Image 1 (cartoon, rainbow, N blue to C red):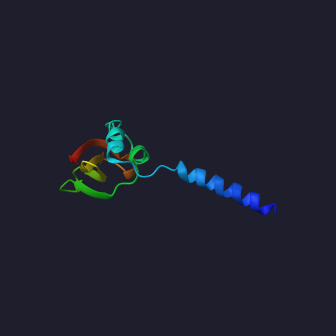
Image 2 (cartoon, rainbow, N blue to C red):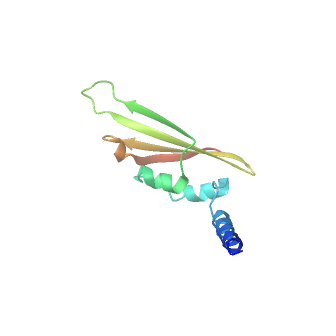
Image 3 (cartoon, one colour):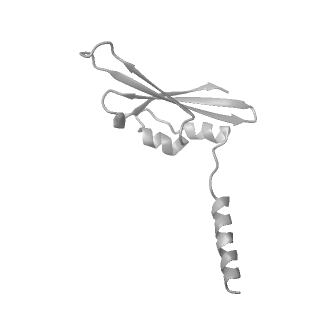
Length: 111
């Protein structure tokens, strides 16, 4: 008989934690969050702010081994809202190691 109240308590605790779990942001919330993006932000700070990107791409510039190579990492996020779809592109630059990725620019591609 004592196990029933304990089970109810456990289920109530789980239900409360699920209710407070944040789902993916809406387009409006994403627009607000993107206002806090700043040049020079670290890759992990952007991941904490916006989550994992839907798409990524990597480009390396530099024609010869004597030239300093510059890499560009692009993260693309897409959200759907009542007014349509919004796509945010965040560009990171690095001249050294991947751990040094920093935001260089960002832009909303569509609304």
